[in-house]
Length: 255
Image (cartoon, rainbow, N blue to C red; front, side, top):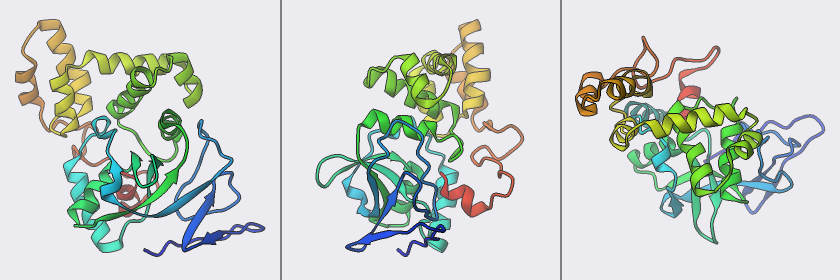
């Protein structure tokens, strides 16, 4: 796949062996965002190339919402325009990678019967990679549950304190603790329904869970009543509204 680059005045690009390298210190510019303000070490080059989807470990799939309608729209866009933005992977061994961000893109590529994916390859610690994508507030809009699930991974699996996480992502500790408390308040079957896209985060956290807690009623009955309720009230339950100046293709490729 051809990647387009725009040289920045007094800056240059490096290419070796058919692979483009991106300097994350901001010396070079590329046609997709490579902002880095998290904990990853900025003193190395990041490699962008096609890799086999079979080499990806989908370790954080449980932290993402499946959004079936978005996957369909994204697959249609990929068929027309190809993959625009690379996914983000962390190198694990010589020929395997952990998928950090871009789960919907991988699903859409599989739907298009593609066996490779354009990926930006990071080096470093797994927890630092998770912190960096959470800190990229301007790069994408996270669903509340996805944020909470990643914070829980950092806290429970990588054993980072709430204050440490808050410091690394540039947030207050109350922001971290509030999301962790929200995640813990939801039952596993309710979380699974949200992940599958049958219930929105808004309906689960604002309606179903509070009523179930206060009345002791069966959560399954409430789930049936609120399936399809949008996380964005007044819009399609699966597709977020366009940001100002954002095109349909740009929205789809940031998923």
